[in-house]
Length: 314
Ligand SMILES: [Mn+2]
Image 1: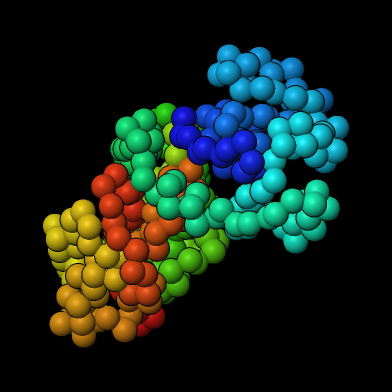
Image 2 (image 1 turned 120 degrees about the vertical axis):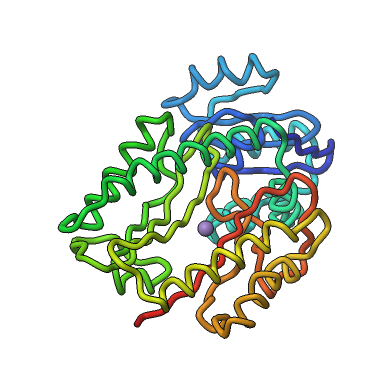
């Protein structure tokens, strides 16, 4: 469980499911988490009884939600003057409603994103497990890929292996792309049929305790051309160089440049059309983005992906 500290006067009010889960360790479909010096959880009658039991055992006060009035009353009971909201996940409608409380309102989304990027041991263990499972599922799947299969069939095989090997669910909709479809980084998996001498791109991930893994692999069915092999080797080398050279304290722009500069030497950088990677945790895309535009530093225990790619449509 992660901690966020408010004060007598300053409260955090979180509605987003992932944030509520992150700060309490308990996943409830709907509710509000109010953090002052202590935590108060609000949820409605649909979830209240089991939620109350869990929260009470964690020392969190759990109250029945009967509309925003319930929160407003608690805020005045506590004497809160300032309310911090996660603007990243707060709608304009909600913002308008909270404004009616008559308190000072400010944004805490950067503070939360940055603190979430640094993982503790149990988060790291969950992500590692999710990585192991998805790698195993990938290897089992790729052995079964055959001419005549559709992208959707390969996706189904992969996802059922992931579940069989212990994944709780998929981290995102698995992408399977054959042939020229693999030139689209986020191709929509469909009914394209695999034929001889085609690339097979798989981008997938699964979850353990809500934590995601993210794996992209390119294989080739048949005899790859020299051009394909050159690109494949270059991407693999760019990936390895980045893994070897990235160390604690490096900025995202410098991390990204390790792979990008190598691909530039091979005249392939213009086909590397996305960032090197991104943070990963309860969400598949988290802070920081490991891109040429981010000066954020990669500090100890930040979990992020390293996934250079070269996308050629011919
Ligand atoms: Mn990714």
